[in-house]
Image 1 (cartoon, rainbow, N blue to C red):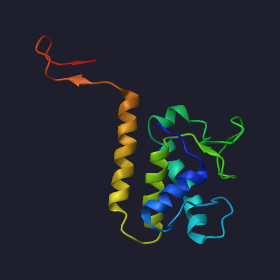
Image 2 (tube, rainbow, N blue to C red):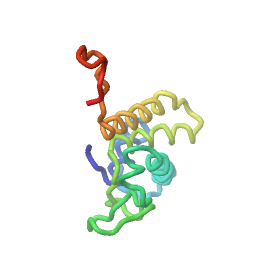
Image 3 (cartoon, rainbow, N blue to C red):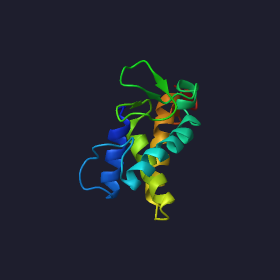
Image 4 (tube, rainbow, N blue to C red):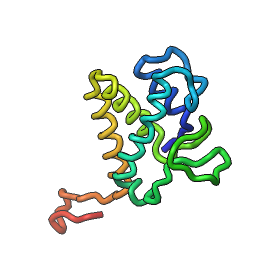
Length: 142
């Protein structure tokens, strides 16, 4: 699980959906309206992520960012260098679907990618496997 800064998450999402042609130089306080909107939508993505496992348990205090100092916990991005405390690809996937939905564009595939990613992360966190093929005990949880 790779952690990303606010700027990196916004930059990757904007490149992947094609609203920028090169990495974003500034996310927080940008003059580009799309980048400002995407940065704001990061809070909506975080709200959704914090309602799901494994983050409901690990980030249950509501703080989903940490400042560049590694100490200051935050609930809203205030600097490009703030580090997102949940999976970076999950943040990018969430930004893509939220941004496209906000613009009234097709967002079905990015939303599916976001849901699949969050479900995989929850599955890894829960980590119980039902062995239906065990002949000795008719199936068991490992």
